[in-house]
Length: 497
Image 1: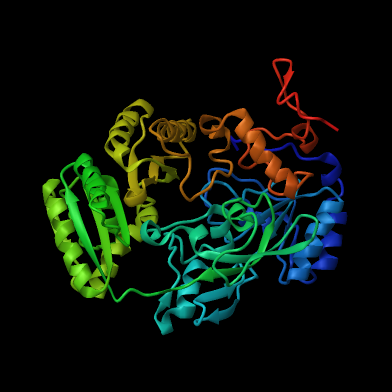
Image 2 (image 1 turned 120 degrees about the horizontal axis):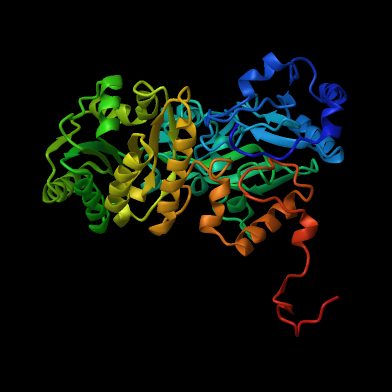
C-alpha cells in the first residue's frame, strides 16, 4: 500500500482476541468477524488500489449495539472506522490494522414515509435508490442520485456529501437531509434537525454532512422527498471539440437556464459507454453533453428550443431530443454506466474528483490532454458539467511496474490544477486518504488546525477514522495551546486565565 496510515498500536493488537470476545458480548451470533478470510471482503472500498485487513469487523443491528460498541472502544482507546456500503472512491472506509471496522449495512430499513411533510425516515444502510423506490408509487422521489445509487447507502452519502446528475438543480446530499440521529465516540446518542425545515443554533447538521466518519456514526436519517416533475426530456448534443462543449455549458447557465442535469463525456468515455450500453451515442464527436430539462410541458418545450439555439451557436455537430420516457432513460443509461464501461477498456482506472469554475473547463481539459503525454497514461473524462465537478478516469495497469505510482502522480497534478484555476479538491467523493496529502494545496496550516479543533470537540482521543482527511495528526492538547507567532501572542491585551 503506497499511502501511509497511522502506525498500529502493539498493545491493542496484543489484545485482539480479548477485544473480539468483548464485542461478541455486545453483538452476538455472526455480528463479529475476526478470521482473515471472513474479513477479506472488507479490506478495501471503491478505491481498490489500497487494501488493509481490519483488526475486527463488527456488524451491529441496533442503536444500542452501536452505542455500546463505541463506548467500549472509547474506554479502551481502540480506533474505529465507520463503513457503509463500501463504495467510497476516496478510501474513506479504508480499514486500520489495529481498528474495529464498524459496518452499518444491517441498518437497512425504511422506517417511515410522511407524504404530508414530504420526508422519509430511513436507516443509514438503505441504498440511495431504495429511497426513491419507497416513495415513487405516490409520484415522489429522492433527488440526489450518484451513479452508484443502486449500491451506495444513505449513511455513506452523508459522510461524503454525495451528489449525482441532478444535483445541479436539486442540490447535493446536504441540501436534502433534514435530520439525523448519531452516536458519538463516547456512546452518547444525539439528534440533529428533524422533519422541520431549519434548526435553531449552530448548523451541526451541515457540519456532519461531509464529515467522512470523523465526528460520529449516523444511525437514522430524515431526508426530503420531492414531487416528480410533470415532464422531463433530455437532449443528446455532440460537439467537434471539448472547448465547444465547455462553452455551451457556460452559455446555458449564463442564459439563466438551470437544467435538471447536465453531464459531459469526452471521446474515450463516449465510445466505452456506447459499447457497453448501446444508447445510440454519436461516435464521430469529441464531446457529448446530456442536458435534461424538467417542469411543466410548455416550459420544457420552450427551454428545449433555447438550449438547441445555444448548442448550435457553439458548433453542435449532432443533436437529439428524447421523445419518450424510455428514450430519456436510455440517454442516461450510458452516463450512469460510464464508470463500469471504462473498466472494460482498461485493466484498472483511478477515478478522480475535483471541482472547477465552469469557465475553466476548456483550459483544464486541454491541460489534462497535455498531461497524458507527460505521464504516459490515457484519461477518459466523465463529469457533472453543470457544476464543474470533474471525474477524470486515469487508465492504468496495476500489473505493470510503476503505472499505479504514475496514475497517483497524474491524479495529484489534476487536483492541483483544479485548485490553481479557482476550484476545490473534491466535489462529492470526499478527501479520505486519496486527497489527504494534498490538503495543503488548498488550506494553510492554520486552516487545517482549526478544522482539527472541530474534530477534537467531537473526538478528543482521535479514535474515529484517523488517518483520513488531515495530512498530519495532532494531539488535541497540542491544538489547544496558545499560539505564539514570532514571539508575540495574538491579541496581547486580552486577559488570559
